[in-house]
Image: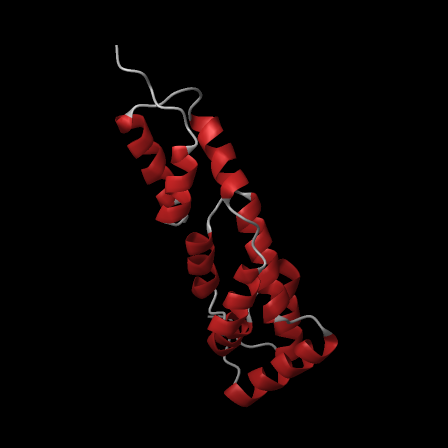
Length: 151
């Protein structure tokens, strides 16, 4: 482990220059580097005051990024919790997500065109569930696919 820098603010700012961190993640990183809890809190407070550390903005940015990559609210919520963000911040960020219908339709269109049988619908549904969409939304999206006619 590297010896701590003299100033926890400088170390925290250096960390934030490489990647966005939540307060909890940055607090942990500073403690890993040998800074006391008081030193870490002082640095975090100053970063918040300067606008460089904002869990709400981080949650919003991550939410938009994951949604743009085709992930559903459940998966996005998991990723935000993994970043140690608070439930109220997560809830606020998720409330701004658009209706998933267009995203689901686009994901289905990339995997399958035309009518689908039961097996194909099941595979598509499983894929969408793994991407973090709710079964209700998945069911509505799958219902929009024409059924394959039996020969």
